[in-house]
Length: 181
Image (cartoon, rainbow, N blue to C red; front, side):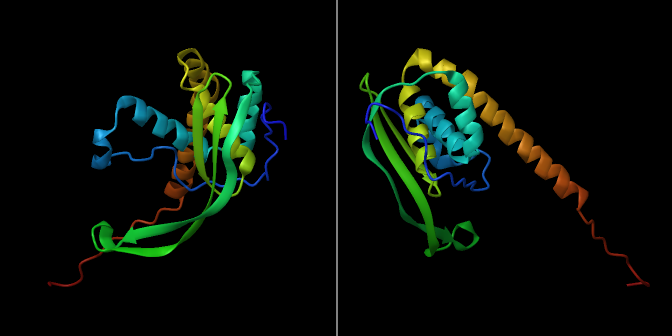
């Protein structure tokens, strides 16, 4: 692979963690983050949860091909998953998840990072490139308009479709009082 070109021909595996791109919503530990950090976190969450084919289509429509150098990866590995009983008990390990990470350096010196569930190296590279490009004010607005907004709309549409399917199968249970009890 030429280090100056973005090779997006990854493994093609898509993974969706079930989240809709609203990481940390309502989390008091995120209160100390700056607005820029929260915006970057939200952007990376949307990219991580986006279907790979949709992300590639939106990237191609943007019509740019910036040069970059891979600083790390993309590499696939495992992370430990931890939980707490009832959300407040002692932490415990309950499994592992496959993740792919990548770090890129653009020609202008901007550095971008990405960590995603699954093994799709192409998606991780592309997300890292988008992260780096979004550090530039003019590119950030293009990325937001041409990539992020359509992905947020798609996630919202999938959420409402799932909610309507769930509502259609909802069962309301009630108790009838019998006798004089």
